[in-house]
Image (cartoon, rainbow, N blue to C red; front, top):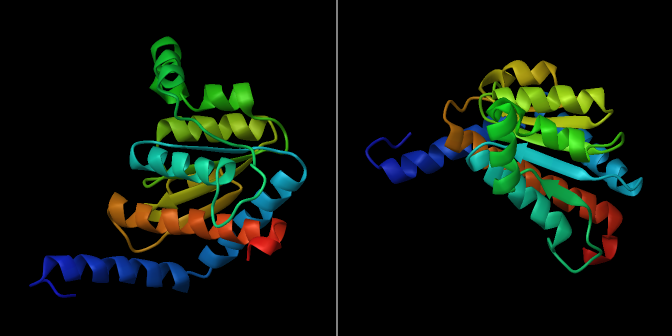
Length: 196
């Protein structure tokens, strides 16, 4: 690492995190499982749901808009919803507590055959834990983009994708957004090959 140059050192740390992810025996296999699950969900008319806190909520929103809008080229809009509406979040938090803000939306919108993608850099966010439980109770497949060993969520999700090495949320989230973009591209290539 180039500690005398903090900018270069940060890029090198980001590179090392990505290299550790690529070297992880489970990482690429579970990303492929995510691709297969997302493609199967859309093929059978299911929805893609997403959630996370803070920067991870931004990633959840980014994930959803790529499906309803456009990624590489024009194609049919695809059903994806991020749990990010401020009025719904504040209503649920006020009435039921912040731990329920995602679980209540899974209860409202999740159906058997849907896919929930949740991002938690710690793997221990209480509202994500509750959402995973609610999803499993409804037959919703759960993908977890996680960090720091995966936390409690690693055993609650169907497809855990854990970023190794990184100890900070920023480095973990940088890999998460790469995973999301790569999954979207892979699914699009399968569903809309003419765009490629």
